[in-house]
Structure formats: structure tokens, C-alpha cells
Image (tube, rainbow, N blue to C red; front, side, top):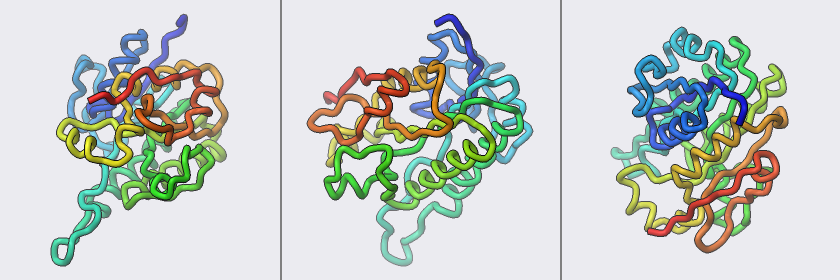
Length: 256
């Protein structure tokens, strides 16, 4: 690699965020983190602690950035499926709307205002969960959304928002439907899930994917791809477009 880029990573303190920050830093890129808490592995002067409501902080962090990686989101629904009344609340209005709907709007508006060329949006395989349940596999990037529940609905909005900003404002937007990278404490849930080991995404593969997405010289104005590690039993997500656009291949596999 003979070029260094300045990259803003939102959600940089999260499980995938830290892997991405480390992988980009190992390649020599200048990484700026943006999260509600400090980012491990980043010196304080390279990490901005704030929320999307603090638009001045976000815009300052985005100055002179060439690529923006948007990972920040409230992960999954607080309750799915809902319980019975009175224990039937969810987190749609309190967390999903401000963080997963309004937040991406602020991110893309910031990219538009400051002139960031490339934006990489982290979506989720949950947006096509219905295809997996019906056995319509492998699912391709052109498969229409069939979201799991409210969290997945916010990711459908994220994908549509990225397409609009690519078309209307000339941004280069890559949407990646990520596989499942289990957070600490999710291991048992992951092991007991029906599709988990075939949609697993290791932190190492996640880091390498985002390096490829940053370093690829030319991308379409808008594209959707998948990112998973190697499946254990069968291929559920079609990685053909990922290979063709980014030259990326997964290295890892869930073996636990």
C-alpha cells in the first residue's frame, strides 16, 4: 500500500469497532474514532467522545476525512418477541429511533456537508432474515428485504438512506450486511442459534473486510455486499459481489 487515508469510524469503541480500528491502524491509516465512550487502542487525541446529537463534535471529527465507516447503532431489539402486557415494551422509540434512524441521517448529512467521498454503512443480515427462515439461500445483495423485527427495520432504512445520498448528493456509498460477530456474553446464544455458525463474522475478518473497503480504489456509486467468515456447513450469504468489488475473502471459521 502506498497511500495513507484519514478515516472516521463511528462506533469505534464497540466489539467490531475496535477490530476495525486496529486493522486500519496496522495498515498505517490515520483513524479518528467517534463513540459515546473512549476507544481502546486509540490515543485520546484521535478519539472523540460524543453523541450524534452533538453535531459540531461530529463535524469537527469529520474534517479532512476521506472515508467514513458508520458502525454505531443500538444492537438488536430489547425484547423480541414481545412479552405479554404489561411486560410488552421494546426500545424502538427510546433507542432505535434516535440511534439507528436519526443517527445515520446526521452521519450522512455530515459527510455531504464536509465533502467526504466514500461512506461505508454497516447493515445487518437481519434485514433478509425471512429468506433464511424460508430456505431461500444463498441470499444475494439483490434479494428484497425481509426484516426480522424492529432493529432490522432500522437497517432497511439505513440502506435506503445510503442509496438516496449516493443518488442525490454524489456520495460513494457501500452498504455491508454483516454476519454475526458475537459480543462478549453472547457466546451461548450464538452456539444455540440455528444459523449462527454459518453467518459467523470473526473480528479478524471484520477488520480485514473494512480495510479492503477503504483501500479499494474504485467502487460503484452505491452497492450492497455481505461479509461473513467461512460457513461451517452451508453458504447462506452470497459473497460473490464482495469478492468482485473488493477482492476480499474470509479467512476464519467458527470452530468452538
